[in-house]
Image 1: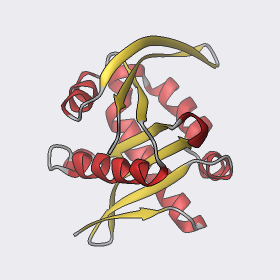
Image 2: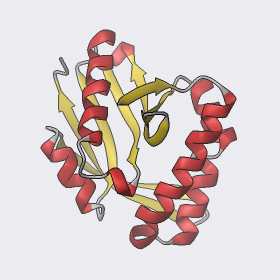
Image 3: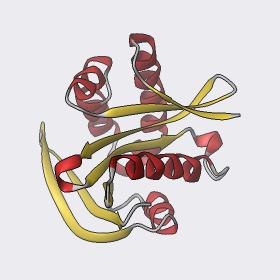
Length: 167
C-alpha cells in the first residue's frame, strides 16, 4: 500500500537524502554528468540542505510502499500568489511506470486544493525527455525556458512547466 508521509523527523530527512543520492545518480548522471550531480546533491539534497529548506517553508514527503521508501517530493506553497512550486518529485527506477508518479501528483494536487492554490509549477531539465513526457501527461504545459547559474560553473538549463486551476 502506497502512503505519502510528511517528512518531519531527522531520520526521515536522512532517508530522503539517501533516496535522493540513489535516484539522482542513476537518472541524472547521463544527462548532466557526475560532477554536477555531486554538486547539486550537496547543495540541494544533503541532510543539512533538506532541513534548511523545510525551515524555509518547503513541505517534503516520502512515498512509501509497505514501509519501503520508493520516492519523494517537495512543494513550496506561495499562498499570496496562489501558486506552488513542485520543487522535487522523484521515483526509484524500479517503480517508474507503475503509477506511483501519478499518485504523487494527485496527492500534491489535493494538497494544493486544500491551500487554495490555482497554479502548480516546476522546472525540468530540457534534456530530461522522459520526465517532460510524464509532466505533459499530467497536464503540465511549458511556459518558458530558463537558464540558471547555480555555482561552480554549472547551470540548470530548464523548462518551466505549469498546470493551472488545481482542484
